[in-house]
Image (cartoon, rainbow, N blue to C red):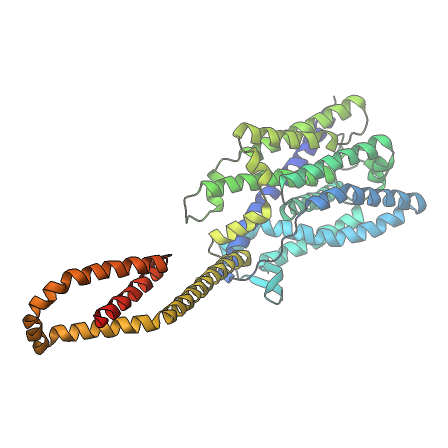
Length: 477
């Protein structure tokens, strides 16, 4: 192998790995920054765009349509005119991407110089849909990006092309996210078939890659003649082989961040520095698997002297390595149950945001159910009281008679005249006591036979009726 070619392969490997590494960590920094901002402002967070399972199923089909359309366009029109339009488009988009990338790398200068910070926000009702923060350093980086874009359009220099491609890849990995590992596996599996078909089955992929003169691929000369190298003397790697697996690797870092959140004591807020010291098992293993898959791609390409679909090796490397890591750590269920949307809400609450509307709705429903149960209890109590009142009304005459007899008895006991009279007639009452007691027992037995005792209220009613019969008998005697 020629030394220049070996350097080219190593350079392509570095140009693929560094955007993934930087973009993954930028996504964590943006996640923490966004959660702090939402918790501080107490405003609803802007909806985060993420790839879902339905998007993952449709992605290879949409990509196939776009790829074949470009192939037809290059067949019908002159590629020079097509590339003029593409260069104009990517130069404008590239300015924004490169300015953001450079601004993120130079933020420390504004902090060190204590420069003023400006913000531009757009809201829809209470929901924030756009937010841009910048300093004077950002304007300088914007000017640098514009100058580089102009030079690229004029010279088509491969170094400037790599600069824009690096910015595209890094920003794409940091801004895009998959909602779960299931979505990631569906996407990588679909693009696995997509890459094999369009590279091995047709000439479409290779033809478009050679004719498409835009910063959507990483380039490196096969020789050391870097200044005069022609496009035919370049090794290349498409940005799709960097960004798509890179988003999956970034998802592994998000999962490691979730493990870090779970390990924190209650009420302790997470920090970027704290996560740096935490273990990042899934991210490290998956990044190493990506590097191994890329090395295999280069070896096979060099051995057979033919273009290789990189996702043929990268997709299985990323999927299998992450699944084996989850199996080895005993976290298969939590691995497949992980969701970035749930993590966003959890992190915002950890930084002090009030529970979401779902939590409030759940609490409201719980309160409503308790109120319903209380009202039901009240209705039951009222119904029972009404039934008791009806029973009381049915026995009211007997109760009043009993109360009259009790009052008469108590008044007779309290009156001194009646007490004297009772002393005089003591002998007479004692003689008739036995007969009265026998009559009392007979009356009680007859009352119990006539009125069944079903419950406590029925017992009281029978007793009152028995007393009434006894007193009637006593009066007759």
